[in-house]
Length: 314
Image (cartoon, rainbow, N blue to C red; front, side):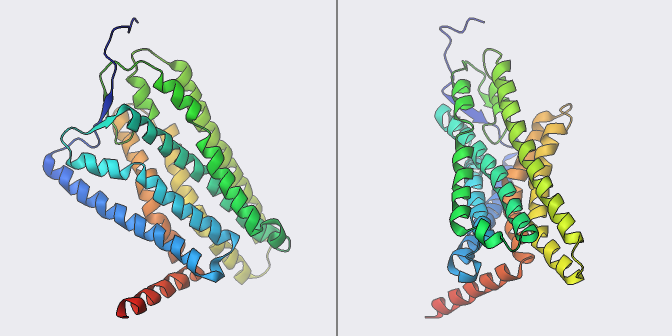
């Protein structure tokens, strides 16, 4: 196809959730409350770990980094989605769209790296308890966390660069609330099966390799727990890992549905709902999962609440 002389796209239209104005306002209020609660919940966990010396351990350091990541993750999509609910144009510039694409996928990739690291930490704590303090030191823990962030942010610059070089000459409407590679590639004036296949292979490798590592870690944990003669010891071990397994199930469950669900019928609607779940819903419920099932975390949060009330009275 000859695209020379054709006006290129300088902005995109994110349809978000097409509906009446009244429903748009209602959705804005719903997602705004959800957004604030997510910031407060994850922020409380970060503050609790930072302020309570008893939580200065690798397990809670990983949890605090995970909560901080969730805060960053929702900020790549929700603020723009809220703006679009009240906007008539719903436009996003070409540069802003690809920046959102980059940070959204980089944050998501960081999460797929942090979750196996948290599983590995639980494996060491339960299966190698005597060697755990020497192997998983605070210094090593922070280095591994930094490595997760760095590698994740290096995964997508090259694919995104090649997508930006494709000719976009219209239409410029994306039936989504985020700049996703699938809808973006569909808007290209020329087919790009190589880029599409490369993005799919990269995402699939990241998801399935990290999921395999998590399953492997918890298989070893399960074997070790079942060999514990004490029922109390088994309950403690399962309680320690239960919260993380719930989070893993929620996050990877939606990603797996994205890959194996049928695309006939209403693929755009399915993709939006699934993306909404793992990008907005799971960051909201994760603080509840961790705080409600963890005695140390509940004690630290209560301590912060008491200190806040005392400072307000002064």
